[in-house]
Image (cartoon, rainbow, N blue to C red; front, side, top):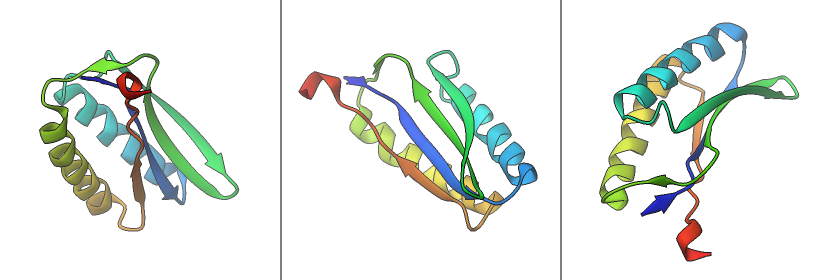
Length: 98
C-alpha cells in the first residue's frame, strides 16, 4: 500500500523540548526503517513550536493497517513521556484512493 507519511508534534514550548522531540523522532524513524523516506522539519505557529515528519513521495507499506496503529500508540507514548503537554497528529495520505 502506498502511503503519504505526515505527522506533526505540536504544542512545544521551547527549543529544549523541540530538540528532545526531534532526537526522539529521528531515532524512531531510523528504527522503523523510514529515515531515508521521511524528512523532518521544524517550525512555529505563534509561540508554539512544532516538529513535522513528511515524505516527498508515497512510501510502500506492507500491512499498513496493522503497523500504523502500533506505531501511532508507541510514538505518542514516547513523545508524551518526554513532553507531557505535546500533541501528536497523524495525517496519513492514501494516494491510491484518490
